[in-house]
Length: 202
Length: 184
Image 1 (tube, each protein chain N blue to C red):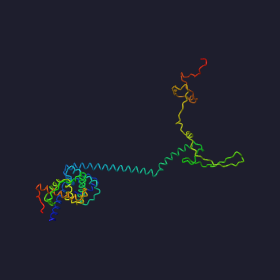
Image 2: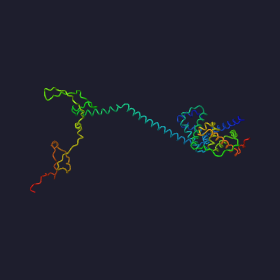
Image 3: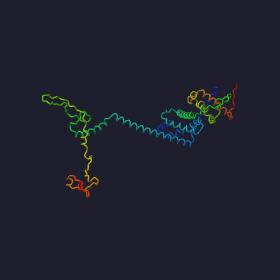
Image 4: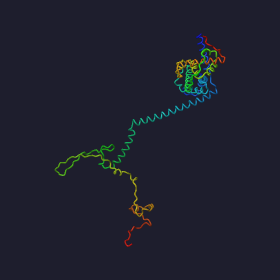
């Protein structure tokens, strides 16, 4: 009996599942549902593509940073090259005595005296070799000013006190003699009067 | 229709293959979702969620035969429905015990056709319907049902018992079967 019941149970379940599996979808309704599904699938596909692009960009950035960290001399060479040219300019304007030995970017002189002989007041006293104290003499900043190109220097116009409030003189083409002649205050009508001291009679 | 070939094409993101698979399985999967959720809109949403997961994870599926493919898709649909039901807290126990003197066996259902059984199952409350679907229709053990629904094994058994008794009552009320009483 119980076996019959179990058989019946299995039978109705099998029949039900077979009926359920064989059903096909409603045509029009299916198309509407498919449209909704395909939109969702396409959006997820675009999101995945965007993730790949961002991942590739992050990878490129990391590899660039790693390259700079691993090979710093690549950028260092360019930097030291710039320094070399500047130091070359500075060195050419400095006297030899101003060369500081031991500095990072200035060359040492080939021969350097570390001791000098000093003579005492009396010729009888022996000459004593005294060490030369090579101090850390910095570069004289005033000397550096000499290497400033002349184009950057400001031209100063000397004006006579009589011409303080007068407009600047017009610029005309000068002859060769005028250009070579020394500077003279400009002659302006009405302004060519001498500042004479008050007379003692009045 | 060669389902193996369609699965291969769907793995390459072929829209035509995906549509063929959807058209082939949408009818039965819609029925499965309706059997659990009853509400047609919720069932459509869960069916679309299930197909989305199916196409997203089709690369991890190893095709053996058509029956294995159908079982895999159905499992995805059932899991989607169960997750939805758990979120909605649809396992409320109905108050009021069913009459104890009535006897009900699942074999009574073999007298009914499949469509009647489907309509009968839809008349059950959500909690009873879920346990009945998982045990009587899908063939799950009470231990598996308890883990899936987050309930105890005892609750699963009592829910199934009450579902059967309610089915009995419905069948009697509709005149499909005669009332059977316990004989002492």
